[in-house]
Image (cartoon, rainbow, N blue to C red; front, side, top):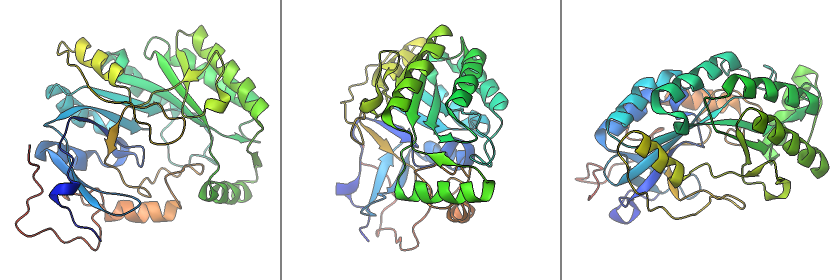
Length: 324
């Protein structure tokens, strides 16, 4: 495997994503805080398995945190705020039944945490995510409309945006959905485009009625006037957060999405796939929950990596520090 070298180090100005590959705030907060205090982290590329050293303080323009439970992450957020580094929390709340989300905290608790984040750090610092939209016999379109409307009502005034997406049925997603359906006795489908378009339109209308802008994440085929494109890693929103904190700063990031249809600004993600034990059967980032739970159990909060590769050998005379 490729070792960490100066050529693999990323020490320019950037936005750090933590993380769309796993739920760092819910499960790895202590580790993140350790690495933030150290100022850097080692990250394994999920495809080539190269190791990079990524800065977490010097040269960082801001953070985007992705989570379903920010409760364990309060201390980390407070420390990032103290360092005057703006952040946005992309917070997923769907209210799905346990057959689809076996270990996610209750929607009421998530709503309370979002309101707490908005009050503490400002309403621009948190975005509600209602994604992915999964159509099953437990969650048909009318269920989504009722649940979404109730959540929007509860979050009115705390958030100004909700990011929506429809489930992408990858091979492992379809396998996990089928297994859950057999175990739970429900049916599921990937609905046709007309159903998704109609649902996107109605969700957008319901959000607007509560003063919330609905956006659609990386799915241009389902855009409607009521639901326009998302930008989850958004340099302009980070600038708004910094300005609201009294520490305005320009963020010279460039637009560089990580998949077709993605309109995000460029970022560096520090997570690892197959490490989130939430147990959401539709998750694209987890092959099996058994593997994710095992890897979570192998995590060392004191490591330079979120999950130390078994083949890793530190380079001679290398502390992991960046040439800043």
